[in-house]
Amino acid sequence: EDGTVSERTRCSYVSILVSLIKGSSLHRLLSHWQHLATLFTSTNCIGSFVGTQIRAESLNALSVLIGKVSNEKDVIIFVSYLTDIGETLKARSTLLVCNEALLNCDEKLATECSDKIVKIISCINQYRD
Image 1: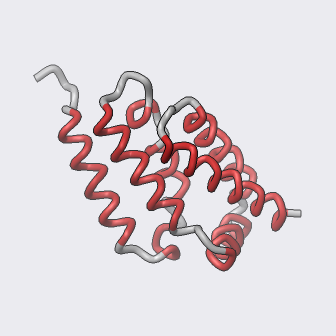
Image 2 (image 1 turned 60 degrees about the horizontal axis):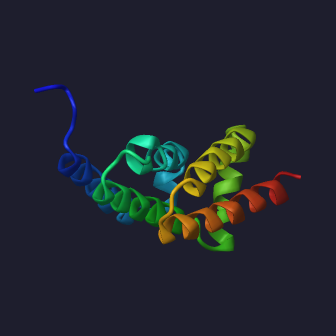
Image 3 (image 1 turned 90 degrees about the vertical axis):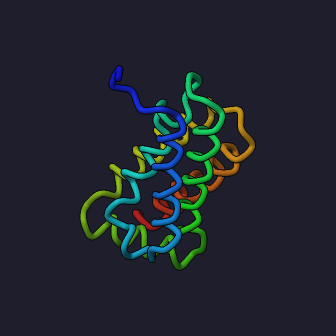
């Protein structure tokens, strides 16, 4: 009635996205990867005013998304894609913003995601040079 979406509904949406991410190859996700990372680290998903359920679901979704770029081969594919479309610097800054949001979240999974994002940023810097 008031134009807001309930936490239960948002959790359902995030769960659906997680299923789609799990079932997709990295190649299919490349063009959406940055947008999804930004979405899952937004204040609407992990901010201090959201419920614990949506925060947990969003962090899980981010963890699954980051898991798609979990090994050296996947990182090379990811960075090559970014280089091909000229988005390396934008992706790096997007990931820095995502990481900043994670640092403000007290969840253990947020810390794990943050560590993985830092590794991806490091790889972007390494392959960009």
